[in-house]
Length: 227
Image 1 (cartoon, rainbow, N blue to C red):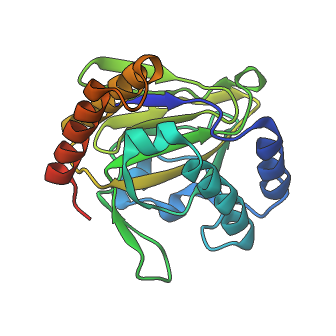
Image 2 (image 1 turned 30 degrees about the vertical axis):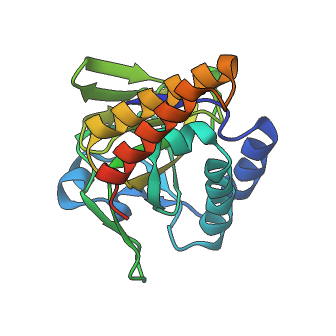
């Protein structure tokens, strides 16, 4: 399932994060890539162990926890501490699949990367190119979102970042281990949860059908979740 989540960061929070990261020391983005990805990756990145990345990442994590849409779509068990990258001057990231297991450097923190996330931190009119292109079961999707909006998509999908030919594309990126490993199962749960919330809005939370459907949702989650 691929879903755009609007306003994960409000404008003032985007500004806070950008004020922190823009003046920091950036390194070659291949530092966090596997051997294959490093061949296709041309960008700059904040060191994942830098204080700036840690503080800015905390702002992102707090925003994710406050986003009902993110929680419903991802059913997160673990979230990799957010990283930050930028592209300029023709930089790009060729077609690749994200590493299945992500390990945070200098720690024993590791996750299975079920979902990838890109949180855009630059208004789209400020740069040319830089689209996130994803190949999924429905074809090729090209995405470029407003600052503060985030795209959530299966980490198993082929994807790339198109060359940035004007301006700078700045973003946060990270991975999520979901309580529900299977993407199709997550989609069913998300669709069911959305339908339950829609019915509850018109009929009320105490409506018999809402109560029954809520029970179905939790019984399916109980069957599929790994915690």
